[in-house]
Every structure is written in C-alpha cells, then in structure tokens.
Image (cartoon, rainbow, N blue to C red; front, top):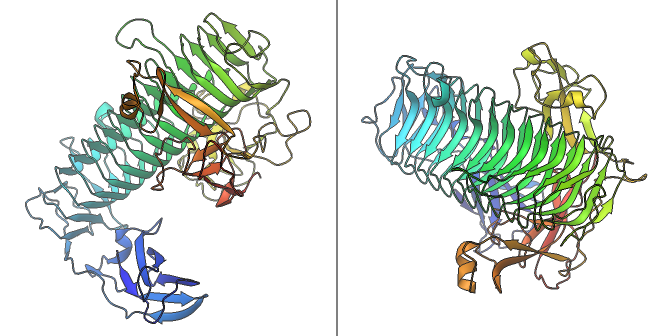
Amino acid sequence: MRVVDVTGISDCTNLTAQDELDAFDWVCVAATDPVRMVSTGLKEGKHLSDLISFTGAAWKANRLTVYSGGTAFAQTPSTVWWTNPIVTDNDGSDGSDTTAGDVRIVTTNPAATYVIGQDKVALVISPSVTLTGSATTQEDLITAQNRRYIWIEGTLDVNGDDRGVTWNGVSFSVLRNIRAANANNGIWGAGVTLEGSSNNKVRTIAATDTTGYGFIMSGSHYNDVRDVRSARDALLAQIALSDSNYNYLERILAVHSRQLGIRLFSSHFNVLKDVTANNNHSYAIDIEMQSSHNVIIGLNVNQSFSGLRIYSPSVNNVIFNTTAANIWNEGIHLFGVTAGPDMGYPTNNLIANAASVNNGYGVYTFISPDNNHFMNFAAASGDVGINLENTSGWIFSGLLKVGSNSSGDCTVTGGTNPGLVDGTCANNGGSSATLTTGISLAQSFVAAVTTDDTANASDTNGSAVFSGISDWLNFDNPSRVWGRAGTAAFPDASQRHWCGLTGNSENCQIFDWRLVNGDTGDAGGPALQNVLSLPASGNDIDVHTWYVDPAPTAQADCDTAVPGSVFNTDRCETTFLINAVEVVADGIGNDNGLCESDETCIYTPNIGAYQGHGNLVSAGTFTDGTITGVTLVRYEDNGI
C-alpha cells in the first residue's frame, strides 16, 4: 500500500488519482484531514514485473497525480518507491543463496530450477524470458515449502519435467501472472500445484498442454484464486480441488481435457464464480466424493460428453445461473450409488436459474433421492428435457419451461413424490412450478459466431479446423468458447460433444452463450431473457432446507453444520430472496450465494448463466419484509 496526503483538501468529492506507471488502483479516504489517496493493489493486468527495469536491475521511478474534477491538482516527485534489493539471478537456486527482502529477477533462461529458501522473497521472471528446467530428472521448476510472504511471477516451459510451480505448506503469498506449458510427464504433469497451502492470493494463471492437471489445490484452504485458465490434454482434470475448503475462485476456464474439466473432490464450502468448462471429453464439472456446501454462481458447461454432475453423497451444494449447451449426454446429472466405496446420494442441492439446450438430456437423474430443488429451469431443443429416475421428495419451483425435445419433455419413473408427473411435467409432491410447454431455445442465444473474434488468434470469421486451433483461452467476451460447427444450424445434434471428436480436420466454431434481444421462443416472447421479475419486497422469498446428518436438535447444531441457517423442528433452513444472488467476497454476509438480510445482491432477470453485462447499477429501492436491509443491484445492460 502507498499513501499520499492531499494537503489542504478535507473532502473526497471529485478527487481521483493515477500513478505514472498506471500500475495501481487508488481510492480517496476521507477519514483524515487532509484526505488521503491510498493504493488498493495492482490493477488487473498489471504485475510486479511492470514496476521493475530488468535491464538495469532496479525499480522504476513512479509518481502520483491527484485530479480534482479531471484537472490535475497535485503531483508527487518522481522517485523510487521501494528499497528492497533487486538481485539478478540467472543460474537457478537451491534456496541457500536468498535473503529475506530480496526481489530476485531472471533475465536469461538458466535451464535450471529455483527453490524459494527464505520467507519474504520474490522471484520474477522477465516477461521476455521463458524458464525451462533441465528436462532430465522430471523436476519441478519452481518450488517452495513452508514459506510465508513470497511472490512468484513468470512464464515456464515444463517440457520434459513434472510441474511448473509447486507450493507445499505456503501461506500469505502471491502467485501472479504464471504461464505454465507442456508439463507432459503423464499424470504427474501439472502447471501449478498448491499442497497444504492456505491464505494465498493467486492471480492470472494460464496452463496449457499439461497432462495431469493444469491447476490443482490439494489440502489447501482459504485461498483467493482469480483468472485461472487451463487448456488441453489433462488426463485427469484441467482444474481440481481435492480436500480443499473455504476457497474463493473467480473467472475460471477449463477447456479440452481428456477427462474432466473441473473436479471438486471431497471439498467443502468453496465459492466458484463465473466458471466455464467446455470441450472436455467426459464431465465438464464433477462434484463428487462428499463435496458439500459449495456455491457456484455463473456456470457455462458446453461441448462435452456430459455437463454438470453431482455424484454420490455430495450434498447441500448451491448452483445459480447455469447454461448447459451442446452436451452429448446430460446437461445436468445427479447420480446416486447404492453400493461400494462411493455409496451415497446427492441430496438437498439447490439448482436455480438453469437453461439446458441442445443436449441429449436436459436433466438426468439416477438414484438421486431426497429434496433436491430446481428453481427456474428451462430444458428445450434437445432429445429429452427432464428424465427423473428414482427421485424422492424433489421440488420444482418458480418457472419451468420445456419444449422442442424430440423424445419428450418429461420422463419420470420410480421414487416417492418425484417432483413432476411423467409425460406432462405437471407438479407432483411439494413442487409449485409455473409450467410452460412448447418453447424453443433456438433463437435465445447468440450461438454460432460468424465474424472474426479479435482476441482469438486461431479463428477466421469464428471458424477453424481442430488441428489449427492454438488459442483455446482468449475471446472477445467470457461467454465465448470453441465448439463443433456441425452440419446444420444451431441447435442440432451434430454440434454436441467436443470438437475434434471425429479427427483433426473437423470444423470448429466459436459459440457465444449470451442472450439476444428479440427472442420469440415462448409464444412470441423471450424464453429466457427478462423472464424473472424483480423482487418487489423482502417477502418474495423461498426456503432452502439443508441436509444435516445426524438430524439437528437445536440451533447450535445448525450453527455448526450450516453457519447462518436457522433451526426448525428437525432441520436447518435458510430463507432467501428469489431471483437474486448474493455478491460474494465483498466482505458482507456469509458468502453462501443465497440473498439474505443485510447483504448486497444482484438481481438475476434471466434463466441461464448470462445475467447481463457492464457495470453494476442500482436495481431500485428495496422494501423490507421477511428479509430486510438488502442492497439490490443489476447489470447495466442485458442482451445483445
């Protein structure tokens, strides 16, 4: 943090600031007189490397200009802002040659490995250098064990070695702007690995052509992870959390794995926001092995064998705003197991605002009993809309939209109070959904892109042959992905599954999963866009019941099992505002995704992952009811 007193000014009105390197975000703080300009951190897209002269092994000078109403008001002298020594280190390190406080820079590739041997050390690889290892002993290029307050940046080519960056027992540290490619030593190959590492910040990770995992956290907790992208060739999963809890992950992209895109394995109370998994050979995202209480907000799963799977005894997961499209088999799959080591059932999961289009099944369940809840769901323009097998106590609420499914909208077999009636999709048991039949989602999305994507290096007017795609990660907007071009206009079965399924010469197409203006797929009106009303007051609510084993007998049991829930007779419940999601990681509320009292929440007007774009602005005055004190916002623009 850098702080500048703005002499003579006691009011922050119309005051802004910018440093000469344009490296930092600044806020005006009026708690003192005079007011202060305070840096809140590096800007998105800026890194420690932007502050360093690699040719001179020195800090760059910087200065701050304060503006009043857009006019320069005051300026600091141009000076070096830090005294940490910058040390050129071009021969690798076993960790014994570092001193706390060093900023070690790599200006030529030593073809050697680095061990961070002290706390309070940075290792920054020049943006013009790619670090390689010896490629002779299957080593990890950069490692740190039981370290604190370290910082790593740089580009790595792991070809012939095991892993790019491995942290074991690291805490209160930063991984930023890491690019790791070609970790191709079978299942051991990984771009970035965190083992037993907690309370770290991870920013802007790109892992490509890694055969084990692109990015994995194992036994790691309370990490803040943003902008992680992983593409191509993972034998296990592109991105994985194993036995890892209370992590926050935002802007996650997992592409073209040979198996899973994203895997949550025995991991709990994690929050994932703005997640895309596409072109993966098996499940796009798999929540398994008793993973519970995870929150996913904004999920795009497409162009894979299967989309979202909640497997075996994975319970109490909350998933808001999902688009599952061009999936060969199930867009959403809840799968129970009756015997063996994986025995158990996905129970008390809440899936809200989900759209399934051009999939083999919109929803497919297999032995999935007990109180799973679908709120605001659309399944259309596929083979089977909803297939429920042996489901009990299921609830469908809000809007339920089906249609244009070639083999039927609803197939229901077995179970007690399965939630819907076979054939008709009428409510059964505790369901209260408002049913609309006969819809089409053929015109709801931008879908196939036929103009050049300026951010993608591989497309020509949105197209490329599979073997010609080198860029799976960069697009003009985050709703775009590569998929199968197919042989007919969207939606068509030939577009399902991953592009390249039929060989290197298969034609691929960029798809854009934002919603379009002017859709007439629901009796002349939009099928998905602006179909969910703004909560009129704090009385526009629903209640989610959490699965707790053993059953709770007092509030203390709910406080332990599901913090923030309320004990009611024999269960733990959360009352939440409908058609809204909590703004997570803002320091307000409990970050469970459900909109509750005294939280800032985003109004979600659409069914699907896309809820608008642009700035967040006020959604209007909120009137208290059962839920009170909510600040309700929305995206400034909705639709293309």
